[in-house]
Image (cartoon, rainbow, N blue to C red):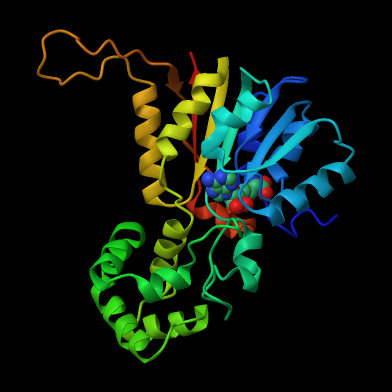
Length: 307
Ligand SMILES: C[S@@+](CC[C@H](N)C(=O)[O-])C[C@H]1O[C@@H](n2cnc3c(N)ncnc32)[C@H](O)[C@@H]1O
């Protein structure tokens, strides 16, 4: 099988080093994608429990693992990693030896025009990771009130031109529903001034994708839940790709790794909060990977170790 056909794993060596994979240890991969990280964990001797919202990923990766002779070393669940506790409880797993979340979308999701994630292809405005999900980007673009849409673009796209873009969307949708990525990208491009860096639709598409998939909801809580089941000395690795998700993970890891969280003005601790992890140094992709894999440029690998 062509390994990079679906997705080239980002910071693979760094993740495998950080996880310190033990023979027959159990590792949770919450974002299976093409299975590149999971396969490397299994090749290093570990066993994997993996989730993905996308049935393309679960189907592709299970074929890939069987082809690589890993039958019996993995369990794939088509689910949200935010259901980690229920998923592992159902499998009778009370402790794990490490975990990875490689956040965001896979190259397959971006590159497959029919998924509607990309402004590079003209396709239906979909953007659902889970194809059985109810909300699509088309619903948001056409049905949300103007002020809510502007807030979304500010909040999840950090788009300074949010009002201009949304008013252009409003004018267009008054004439008929905006149905494709191509139509939306053209509306955005015609409403904002020329940008030297990046496609004018990049931030709007990011905002829509985050909302459709609830990407930032419950992320910190998911990290907490995973850490609760980590064995002492084991690690949770999270790869983030933009400032919004990175900020959430940075704050979640800081909280997990801090003893007292009382107001600094109090003379003694009244919260009784105890750190359950220690933070390791955050890592960025190395020079060689930066040259080979464009996606690695925005990646930050954050790691905590269970105390
Ligand atoms: C960056 S890719 C992971 C790539 C993977 N590490 C590899 O080596 O191929 C992210 C994957 O996570 C999935 N995903 C994103 N959020 C998820 C969530 N909350 N629960 C389960 N899967 C999720 C996406 O569908 C996508 O397939």
